Length: 314
Image (cartoon, rainbow, N blue to C red; front, side, top):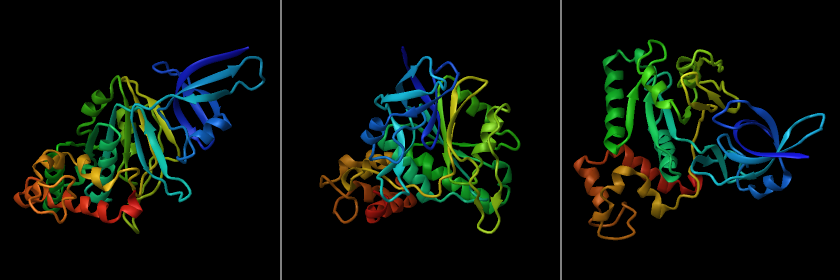
């Protein structure tokens, strides 16, 4: 006799998975059927944390391991270009309600190009991002504070929610905990920005690995090895991810790229030519908005970089 059900993927380590029938938290092991793996061969990971899957479990076997038979359609996801050149994409997580992108101004400095590519993927795949500036307790120097204010102006001006937090003194942590309640939230960012420390601050019962900053390059060392979902004592679920060093875009054409920049989308209808690449065309509303300061030069530069490096990032 076979038992069948539907569950959410809460962890994957290579070819093995843990499933749980959310909102109940009772993880059990699973593997994926070979046919299902082949059907999803465009991605390095055919099943991602957050995926809802159909499984079967054969009673009477000495090892009760569920077999994933089907991956249900994804509501959304965060997808980036895989570092494996033989594959097209890598799904970071699926079916998420919120994405918290952790950034830092120093130790290490989060590059704007990384932030912009991550946000573009959020826009393209229908995920709501919130930008967190972590390690706020370290930003006492006037030059660093000015750098942080510029960062905030750029992304708030683009239409994003930006919050300052500190896992050391607790700044903003209660608000983030409340935002996670009754939802599935993804925490991501470059290496060393403090994702594991933030999860520990949100729920002291969690025990994620916490790493140190590499002083030689002022970059974070990878601490989280696998993608994994955790239940929060205060309600909701969080997904922890390994630190990301690069973020390449997938399946975004040059013609549609600007529509994933909210501040460009607001003025695009004013362009004389359609489609408009917002590079050389006359009477371009986007270029006019950059000149007037309505669109930041930094964001526009990122946009141009994505266009020029299409072979690398798409």
